[in-house]
Length: 325
Ligand code: ATP
Image (cartoon, rainbow, N blue to C red):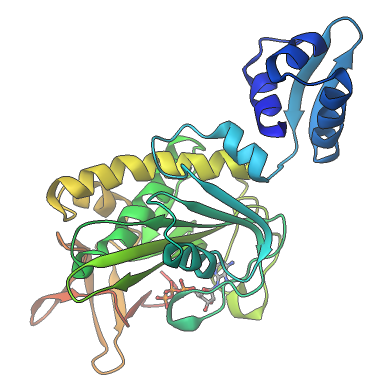
């Protein structure tokens, strides 16, 4: 009932009487009072006035299953939400749900990760209360080789949500990082389970640093958070849905052609390395060139003296000449 109660308070213009809530949910006044009490304990500011009822005055940055359910406005992304206070990694959990047959759109969100990961098994710092750790499970019908483009689609969604809804000057570092003022605030990890020519499921994990004030040795040189960049207070649940609302739009656009032709121009406009010199750290064949933007299938186009080279994300990292970007 907590979820419905929260939604009722949120949708009310001012106070809702205890009696009305009892009637609506078919429960006693004590049950309503207890549920209100629980919400308060979780950080919601609810005013209670005799004969008037209850009014939601605001909330701290609460993140839990009820908060997420009651703020959802997406069409299908997050149609099922699994919220975990602590988990190993939301990608691991989403893959487990993928094996168990959970539907397209299922979203796993955690308050903290104990084994958060980036690409190539590297650790992703995931401390409690400070960040967003979430993974969506998709069951697309396109081919496995097309799935890596989803990282680009997700990066676009995060950058756009941060820009449009929160006024932050987010940029993208190809292929999977979002940066603010040249430092990394978000990483994306796409993984999949496939047959020879079909996808069983794809999981897209997104980690966003919201209110971190410091980072450990591994990340300190490159990482930042929204708060560290002066981005003000952001409620994680709102940012989560802003991202998935944008994701639905860009995913729809991607599905029309199953390539990035509809997104390419906008993505390139956000590309932090665009027209800058980059080092392509390919283990076998590292080189330097000027990044020109992405091609239709998500490769980075890098201009060199020998011509334009298309770099696929796979095992490659791209850095600026003097540092991270
Ligand atoms: P590259 O730029 O080399 O391709 P990447 O963007 O693929 O790297 P990921 O694998 O996505 O990097 O993320 C792992 C790396 O990110 C770690 O090695 C660490 O340096 C850094 N990192 C770890 N935790 C965080 C965090 N919370 N915020 C920002 N950066 C982090």
